[in-house]
Image 1 (cartoon, rainbow, N blue to C red):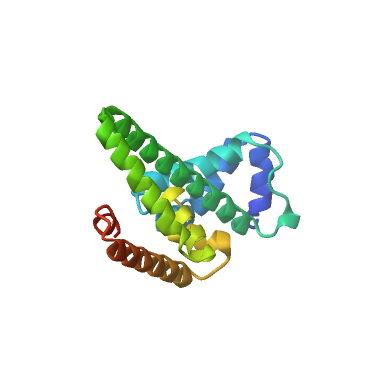
Image 2: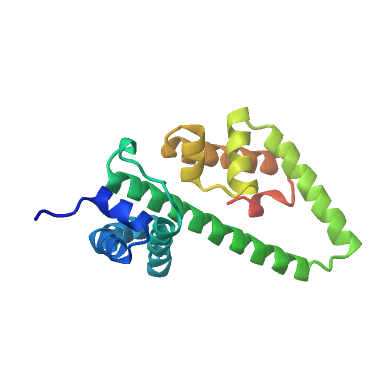
Length: 190
């Protein structure tokens, strides 16, 4: 008797057959872990991603059909999405921790508040002197927290182009701050 196909096992999993789930796990766990680790760079997160994928297989009905392509390709797409969700969750947690730290430390004097408002206005003015493309990328990278690769994907441009535009934008901003003799500028631009 031949090997049971992935699709047959998948259908059995949809009928809550634990042995079928175990067989799919045995077939794909190493591949999915390796794939997840390349995205996440942490063993624990990669293991969590693989666990999420198999929990989704177990809990949800009718997600995969043969007309969607190979089961293994579909499974890698589900894994990729699980990894992206974990990355976003991790970034959100980091931002929340930073915001709590900032709120805790934010017992500023009136003078500090005025200084911060001046810095912010100075930065806004300097950023508005950039090209529209540079402004957009700087906003996404520094103010919205997108990674350079996320920006490249969203803008449908090469990663090197994103890096180059950020580098040129920072160079331009440093020049503006130097020309102004702005006390806030150049030490904050890295």
